[in-house]
Length: 341
Image 1 (tube, rainbow, N blue to C red):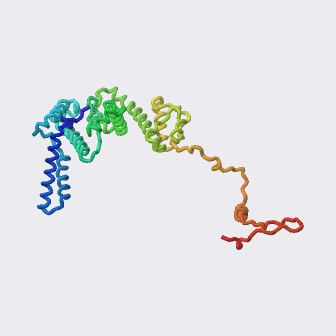
Image 2 (cartoon, rainbow, N blue to C red):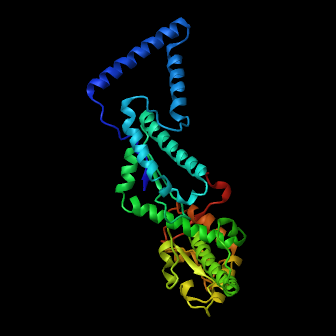
Image 3 (cartoon, one colour):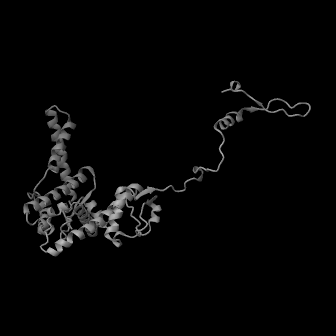
């Protein structure tokens, strides 16, 4: 993997740093004197000086300056990278100018990210691959910490770049299958064989249906479940409960198998059912309460009687003493006008 290491210069000694800080302090004193002469605030002058230097940091530069001896190592690094230039961008060998521009852009982006790290403390990295060129190694840029993180990350480094390239290649193939008219613009030469030309449309159609079925089912599942890495359980669709969804509308005459195990007509039928909405994923209610289901055999009271009981059962007052004869009088029921709100 190609990488820009122009920052890997010799460590600076402490005496040099002291002299450099003293020089910068003198520059600030001169800037303050300039602000007094111009009768402008000192902070405004510092901001203008920072903007002026930012234009230098973030403006495109074709090459690293070699006016001082300390820049020899950085130049050697770039020269070493130049040796692998055609190796990394072999795909663009027909247009050397284009390849060189691409490389310069990547270098400038990496320099900008390292400048952001020095000025703002931001850490970053970026990875660039050429999916349609299997011989290219890719380009890793960014800050030193960011690049070290990517190289030490599990699944990162060279293996991660290869995995990313394979993912991009797969996506390009899916896009090319969905848009056959664009295949010719990608540089794929047509076959001269008549037999292969006759067999190609059928094979391409079956493959495109299978790939589109994979992609459509995956997108539908992730959209309904809300889980980004959800995958279809082709042979055990009942296990989709782990994602909180279930599949409805699968034809009973088609076995629950992976599309690679089904024929083209079955895959095409599944795709049509999915696109029409007959086959779809729906949310499942985990632990739905049973009292939400109404009992049809349960006898219901008339609305007036029900309202009557709810209204008056709480205002029955038994405040009359019992009779001398031991007879218990019924509870006194207040009228609505007697109730206190």
